[in-house]
Structure formats: structure tokens, C-alpha cells
Amino acid sequence: MDLAFDVTLFLIGFVGAFISGMVGIGGSVINYPMLLYIPSLVGVASLTAHEVSGIGAIQVFFATMGGVWAYRKSGFLNKSLILYMGSSILIGSMIGSYSSNFMTEKGMNIVYGILALIAVILMFIPKKGLDDVRGDQVTFSRWWASFLAFCIGGVAGILGAGGAFILVPVMLVLLKIPTRMTIATSLAVTFISSIGATIGKITTGQVLFFPAVILIVASLLASPLGVMVGQKINTKILQWLLVLLILATAIKIWIGII
Image (cartoon, rainbow, N blue to C red; front, side, top):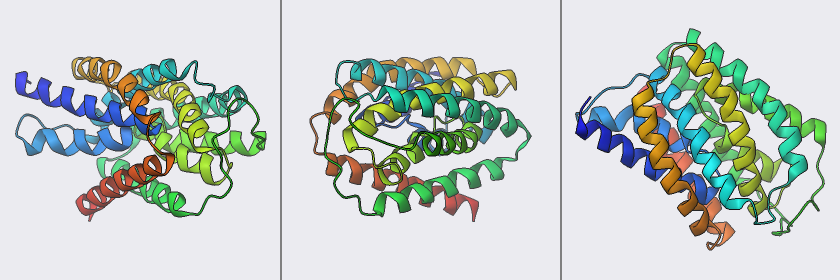
């Protein structure tokens, strides 16, 4: 590990956190493939899927923390959604992250590839009548939201992810939550999920702490910037940006698997 590796990690973390703040994801959908492929591609290091998921868990924790802080006065944080989905996703992510220690590298990549494809499909389903309302005016099934969050937490915890890259389309399509409220609230739910994922990864020895610190610094700098940019961009543009990012990373992962 040298300066070139540190700089590479910082740039990956900065880009991932900026995008996470802008479109309301934790960054793992971007960082997982970048950490898996870019360091070895540029010849600075080679990280395993377990190491990537461990680093990613801590990065998501700090990236979403910065994003939630930036959204704290926006009026788009739905407290009821955060309570029900957050408590369920925390349990699921702890179970998933602990279980990942017993999975193969290929198995973890397959989980990522499947989740990414599901997210892309959900994002292409038409969404009608989702105006950008504020406050707690939105209604939803509490038990349905809790169940979905638990399942998302379980599979996302395997990857050291908060689950936002699947959580966002699920909230938009299945729970009918308005776009900007989804972006803000999903950051808070993902932050809670990342707590469980981080605990599971640390207790099973899957975390490289110095690389994680580099990504933390990059995340704290970039995530609030992404939030500021995201609040000024049309919601349709944000949705399409998220679709293209998830699709591109899914294709790359499946090419590697096949």
C-alpha cells in the first residue's frame, strides 16, 4: 500500500459520496465495483470482495451521515418512514453482514448483480402522481415498509451496503413516496442500515481500517456537496442518472462473473 493507492481510494470515495448525496444512495452501488476493479486496473493494489464490502460499510456510514445532516432542515425527511424502515433494516443488515463472512467472492458478486438488475427494473416502472410534497403528508403501509426494509437490509448487509440503491426504487415504486422525500429519507434509513452492516463486518474481521479512514474523509467532504447539487437538479434527471449508474455497474459485475 502506497501513496498512489491512497490517492486512488480518496478519489473513489469522493466520487461515490458525491453521487450518493446527489441521488440519495449510500454510495456502495458505485464504490463496490470501483473498489473491486479500479485499484487493480491501475496497478496499485488488489482488494477482495470481502475487503471491499468491509471498507464500503464504514464509508456508507459516514457518507449517509453527512447527507442526512445536510437534509436536516429541508422538510423532506419523513420521520415515520425512518422509524419503521430504519428499525427493520438495522436488524436485517446485521444478519446479512455477519453471514457474508461465510460466502465466497463469486457469491457476493452475484448478490450485487441481482440486486442491481432488480433496482434497474424497478426504476423503469412508470410512477404517476408523485409530486414533491413536504412534511409527513404521505401515507404508506407500515408493515409492508418494515418487511421490505428488513429484506433489503439482509441482502445489502452482505455487500457492506446500506441498501439505498435498491431502497430508493422500492420507495418510489412500491411505497409511492415522492422523489425528493425518497432521496432524503432513504439517506436516513441507509445510515441506520450501515450501522448494522458496519458492526457485522468489524466483528467478522472484514474491515481494512486505514483504507476505510481515507474513504471516510472523502465521504465527509463530498456527500454534503452532492446534496446541495441534487437539490437544484430536476428530479427526472436524478432518476435517470441513478438508473444509468446502476445499469453500468450491473453490466460490469455480470461480465466479471460470466
